View (cartoon, rainbow, N blue to C red):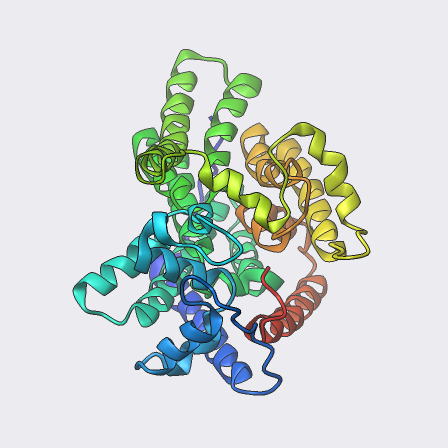
Length: 387
């Protein structure tokens, strides 16, 4: 079990209010940027189900017209799944494409539709509330783990301003992954494995990277705590972490006839069947002349280094938790979506905060991160960046 430092934790409510304030600013800025040229949205070419143009028209015809710029790329697929179900969520190019997207956000959107609530407002509100709560819980986790309240607050700020943290405000599953992972880590540090396993299950219903909690708990036990008590704690967290994904796969088996459809359909976006042999093609994809992934490669390498540092300084649990998402990405043969996938490596932000103890360096990092996030946000709302 990871040693926990005795320290006065920052209060949840002030942290939540700061985080939700940052989310509101990001959402408003995105809406303003989206109203400005250029208009680069893809042109529909006879999709079987509503594509970008039809989705835009649907949003524009409702009260959600001001937030239309936030429904880009994968957000359309989440709406597609919520509206049509996993069996019928597809387009001309990708049959059963909706099975690639886990059910946390689609369930929220479907519930809103059932209750007669505008699903577009519901999706954006749900993700921003979830991410703000997750950020607040994460700050408390970082403080408790390190015994350093200032470090915990620095990690909190770095998570808010990190360049791709804009996706914690987008109607994507990232916000739910952040919230449930943070809650699971909080329960884990409080030595409440059943609660941790419950939130880990919800985490793996949000993002495939959610299983990193289970792998971290088992790996941490094998390497650092080989007691029977430690094994029981690790096994409970691991069962919860894997249960969410097993439930989703079982559901896909019943509905579409193939529990692994979500993995297989990833080939439509350039990912290969999962294999350790794909590590080298992933590295090669960094400098692919047709679609290079320089930024994703640099980000993944940085998180790799931070994950190793977390392993050395905090223990195997925290290192594995950071490294598993990177490993998951690399066995697909591409760094596609790498900017978003690394957001699951939460301990990396604790290590960043530890390295940026000098006040000037911390301020520089905040400014640089915020400027890059602004640039990426501008690209996202103009259909130029999907994460």
